[in-house]
Image (cartoon, rainbow, N blue to C red; front, top):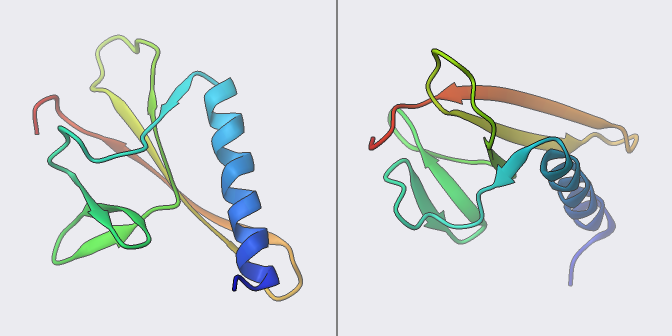
Length: 98
């Protein structure tokens, strides 16, 4: 059975995905056709240097940015013991077909 902190984390994750969708991002839900992603037991894994890393929310920007590669936003959010959200945000510019 899920504990309260796990449920809070899931609610926070869904809230962030909701706001990303409303901000012009397309959420990434599966690893089909993307060699940088793999399916893991706890969700999507990003293949990185040395090992794979779990990300709670992945989203691709659906707009066009001139003179730039496509933008993917990766979010890892956590709740501390007080119930306040902390976040680690990373933007990743990737080449098409990699």
